[in-house]
Amino acid sequence: MMPEIPEMPETTEKPETTEIQEITDIAKKAADKAPAPFTNLVFIISGPSGAGKGTLCQELLRADKNLALSVSATTRAPRPGERYGREYYFYTQEEFDAARRAEGFLEWAEVHGRCYGTLKKEVEKILASGKDCLLEIDVQGGLRVRQALGRNCVTIFVDVPDNKELIRRIVRRNQENEEEIRSRMATADWERTRKGQYRYVVINNRLRDAVEETRKIIKKAREEYASAIN
Ligand code: 5GP
Image 1 (cartoon, rainbow, N blue to C red):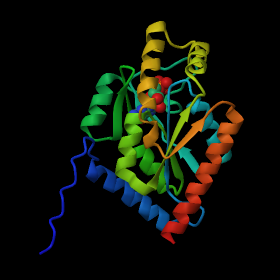
Image 2 (image 1 turned 90 degrees about the vertical axis):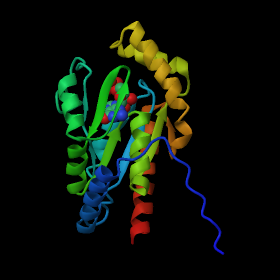
Image 3 (image 1 turned 120 degrees about the horizontal axis):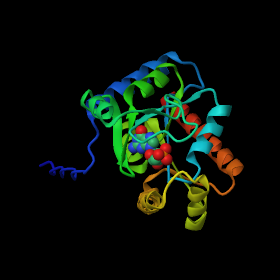
């Protein structure tokens, strides 16, 4: 008699399978058409606010034309110098809720009391153009996308050497009031508890070194992916 196969334990986070299927189909179609070195991977960069993810991503994008950033939607107000469609699509709460209802997000999460979401259209556009997609999103969103995309995505957690450095950077940025700084520190502590679920951890002590290390991770992931599908 065949032994009974035990049931898989229920996970708390379930991928939205139909939405993800659409994205992976687009990725596969684009990968079929695209010559090497296009691999249609999704790179997820997460980590505490103040760890320098934004600058790191800008540096990666500047030197890598096969990589494009998916611009998210958010209900938070623009900071000085931020432009609609460049840093974020700044939505009202009503616009965000409408996009959610219309299933426009690959994932969304509430961070520091504001809503942030990865727009399906952005990711589709990037993958369909044959490029790899860069998502700079929080841990909740990062793990959701990872669970859904599996080997198509590479998770990278960016951190700073210690909390003192984090506080220094957030205060230096001078864009948040005391309450918001506290909230960002609490979120940072929580995010660090999920660090082990990321495939790579990059400590951003010196930006130049962190960029170099992340570039190596991207290169290695592309090579691994290319040899796995060939
Ligand atoms: P900030 O307000 O400092 O630009 O971003 C706050 C946090 O929201 C950061 O950790 C950032 O990575 C995250 N974030 C930005 N866009 C998204 C998104 O589309 N989805 C999720 N889950 N988090 C996001």
